[in-house]
Length: 111
Image (tube, helix red, strand yellow):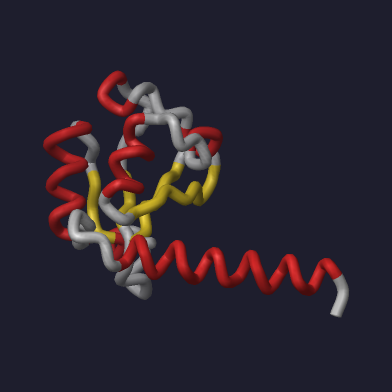
């Protein structure tokens, strides 16, 4: 077994343990609660994923401009990997992460 294979196995275990830890946090939010929080705290038009695609039942679609003062001027796809952004900090704290669909469409998924 080469070094690359060992690294891949270690990375996989780290990912599994991280996801397990995130899933078992007490401050995680379900989809309905997260949508309400995104609307009240960040003034985002957040809706369940089913409104984007009826075949997808997990996740949240942000159905408006996400680049606002309340989100720290979230820079769409570029900011989805920025852990310093106030929106990403909030999402990660509550067990969610951002994933861009295209340059101006953002989805949120549970970790």
